[in-house]
Amino acid sequence: MNFEKGLRTMRLAGKVALVTGASRGIGRAVAERFASEGAVVVLNFASNEAAAREVLAGIESAGGKGVLSPFDVGDAPRVDAAVQAVISEQGRIDVLVNNAGVTRDNLLMRLSEEDFDTVVRTNLKGTFLVTKAVSRQMIRQRGGRIVNISSVVGEMGNAGQSAYAASKAGILGFTKSLARELASRGITVNAIAPGFITTDMTGKLTEEVRKGFMEQIPLGRFGTPGDVAELAVYLASEGASYVTGQVIGINGGLYM
Ligand code: NAP
Image (cartoon, rainbow, N blue to C red; front, side):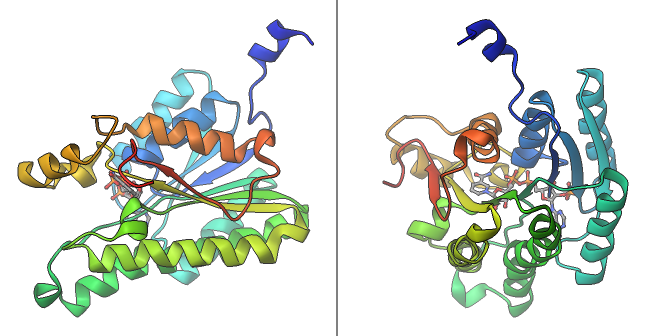
């Protein structure tokens, strides 16, 4: 074994990875880590083009490769067209990270139907639409890695987040079912369930809610997008070829 050579090997060299919601937060960190491991990263976002361009510029200036792919994950025709464009430009898709997500937090009595629909459309239907479009190609390739970003809230619930929790719990059932459907095609499907990660999304929470979470986290800190990105690299890598249908928590011990 040549340790020196091993250290220099990039874990995603030659892979094409589509990361949804890559303009900010966790998706951004995943895209940056994937690029640093040699993947060509397709950076999806909804509307924040300036932020996505900044992520791409950072990747390119570090010697990595990426392209932008703006589309709404909840819009079926746009998803199909964008995935087709990636396949014709890049020739393949090896890794999909379904990360795009939104919150519309409210207690049930104040939660509108519109907000419920928005959350489920982006988080759950979006995951379904992008996975369906990409897995067609992965089946042709006889291999691939799908990583769905769920949430600890989908596992343990959270007052004021019933729509979000339902969408994230839905992702867990979707992940396990697809892992069974796609295993014979060489495709693994896993979910990451992050706890409290410092991003724009959690920046919206009140100080009181943050304090309440912090008291319940055995490791005594919130996570970083980089913590989640490390796990995503592992699940996308060759080393994880025998891992499928799993929900892996990354939450500082908040939920065990
Ligand atoms: P964030 O900072 O708010 O970023 C959300 C990303 O999703 C942005 O890139 C946004 O694009 C994109 N997006 C939103 N709606 C979209 C749509 N319809 N189509 C395509 N892209 C869309 O969120 P985050 O905290 O990084 O969260 C990322 C994922 O992790 C989400 O699924 C979230 O539920 C999950 N998660 C987060 C935490 C946490 O503590 N932060 C914990 C557990 C799970 P634009 O920039 O264009 O708006």
